[in-house]
Length: 125
Image (cartoon, rainbow, N blue to C red; front, top):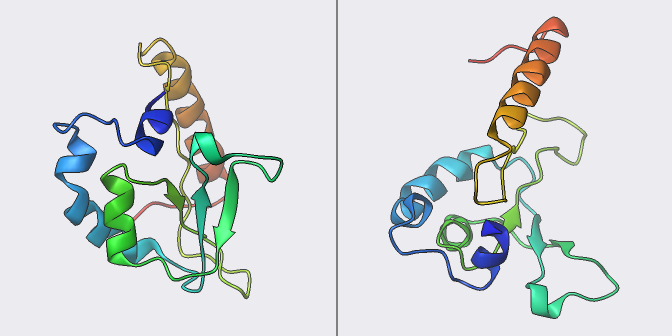
């Protein structure tokens, strides 16, 4: 799985995420809503009874995001502010099988979710 490879820093150097890490971080920092914390995943070899994910009570910065896109660690941004508001919505749809066999199912799910959100009044910019 790519996520497992990223945790261990084994993503190929020609990977587009890695080669565009600085530009991606500059874009992603615009998505930050909760500045005081961000999500992290424990490396596979450090996981225990607390589970894989946790909230780090430190600011998500451009350097932190750059390290994420370089595959040094996996983070998540909190899209909801402390007063329960958000500026954006994202759904991360991945095929971690590395074979692409789930692509058509992923596309069908994405289209269905998009149509449902449009029917509820959500609009893209």
